[in-house]
Length: 95
Image (cartoon, rainbow, N blue to C red; front, top):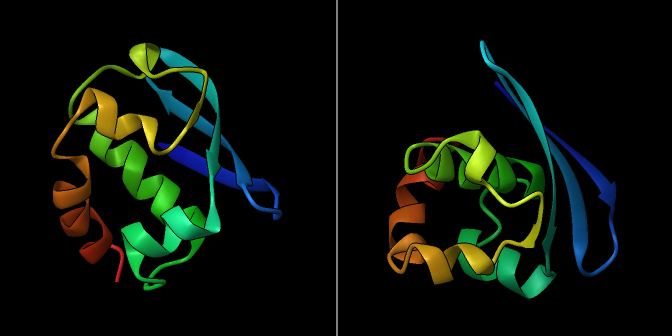
């Protein structure tokens, strides 16, 4: 289960993410600028939903324990070069 709460509405927006499964939970702090939000989602989903989608993407590729505890969402592209292209499908699931 992924729980996302927005803790700062400024720019960048800041989110607290808790990922919980049978093996426990991890906590993460994620930043995302308004420009990045628009670029990734076109404003089609809420910022919190876009962070949830990003974690769905990450969890399909690595265990929750390997996700950085604090990062800017743009860092995902460094580890997974196809993130921006693949992310469209994750956003579409949330529509």
